[in-house]
Image (cartoon, rainbow, N blue to C red; front, side, top):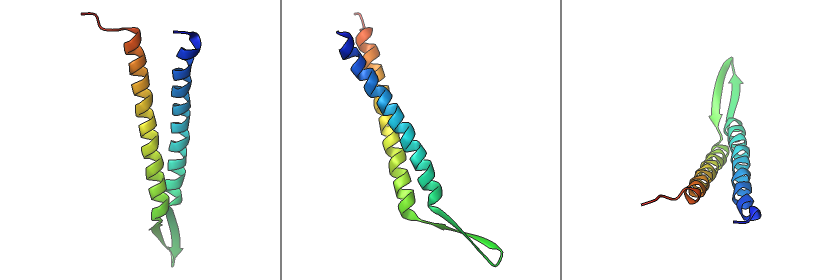
Length: 86
């Protein structure tokens, strides 16, 4: 396999890991943004903003799927390099 063809899956895997890290950071930020704390008469009350939590859950799910795809890419690359012998 030419060197360029081998570098393409590695670059895609690195890009997916970076995208997953960004999505995890966004998910963390959006989750905490969805909790609104109000203090009335000395009592702190939490209110949940569902749209932020939906966005955070979606971002975390997509990040998990990207990481699963990276694992699939790496395992298929290793299995191509070391085929099973009968």
